[in-house]
Length: 177
Image (cartoon, rainbow, N blue to C red):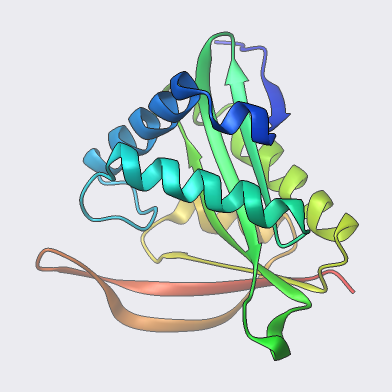
């Protein structure tokens, strides 16, 4: 199945679009409900997602974040973002906090496209080190990140708790200097 994927950077005008917020919430809720390891145990509320998106837009206005979304026709197919670290000693660096792809569009290169755009935007923003973390059982993510040049710099065994299940937390970094 071949899809036409359009990547769009979200601007402040779009972030107040209630349909966009609704679709972003639905995407994240669906992924979390199906067990995706994107930072929530329970599906996030619309208010939580709207607050996160507004916060990202404000931070992106001063170069401290970057938010990107991917559309396939009318479908919100993916979303990703990075944010700079808050600590003064970590300000040259940023963390990719979420990359979420609708299951209908997984396996078609969309995650790679989003990641490449996130990396490119980090370079343009003067980020020196780009980090990310993920649940250790996410082998597809590990393979993608390694293929993009990320290297493992740490692991916390059995750190992520989902009910009674425990997973390693993996830490990867990409040196952009």
